[in-house]
Image 1 (cartoon, rainbow, N blue to C red):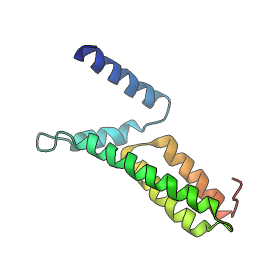
Image 2: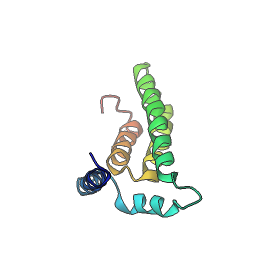
Image 3: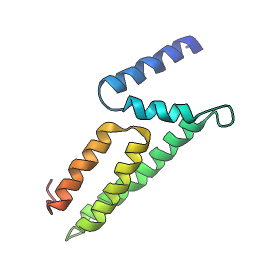
Amino acid sequence: MNSNQLQHQVLYMRRSLFDQGYLDSEQLIQLEDLQDDANPNFVEEVVSLFYSDSARLIQNIEQTLSNRPVDFSRLDDILHQFKGSCSSIGAKKVKDACSQFREYCNAGNAEG
């Protein structure tokens, strides 16, 4: 695949993620605006950090949910951190899921 085809595919995928509501275009554009010649890989680095942090946070969520009784306060703290990370890169659907999950925590609803 040549670079023009790859670039076209990336643009198509990006547009699709915006259209489906997975990404918040305004937030991602703000991140892209912070990228410059001094830090040409800024967005890539931020997204990579998001993925590594997300894996750790999801593991913490799973571990907290497996304990009985569920520590809803700890779970809410983890979800608050995850929601903030999602907001910083524009991961809209995951951020929204974290908000819903936090509502279940506040209600003490482990099944939710």
